[in-house]
Image 1 (cartoon, helix red, strand yellow):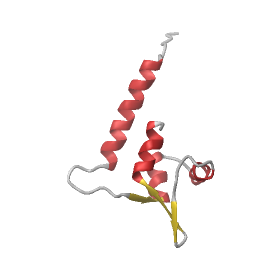
Image 2 (tube, rainbow, N blue to C red):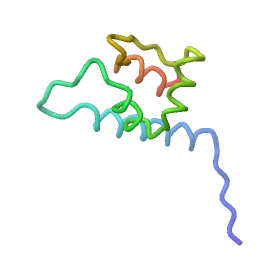
Image 3 (cartoon, one colour):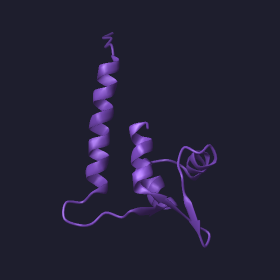
Image 4 (cartoon, rainbow, N blue to C red):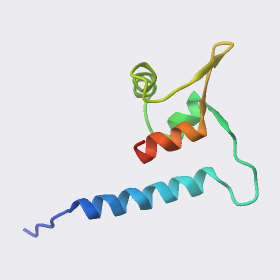
Length: 85
């Protein structure tokens, strides 16, 4: 059995790589990115369930704006959550 040790530096490097890839996915090269995303777009982006998104709203981790029954999330806020700020 081969055992590999994962250090904090390894996890930080993985986090930065993952964030870079996510940023590339949400920022197409020539097109303009959306400033606000709907709930289904956020769930797809973060690969989370509706319940998890609701928990992020309830505990104040992810801010949102509700207009006419539709919840919108600022892309900048999502990036801050991903970066751990």
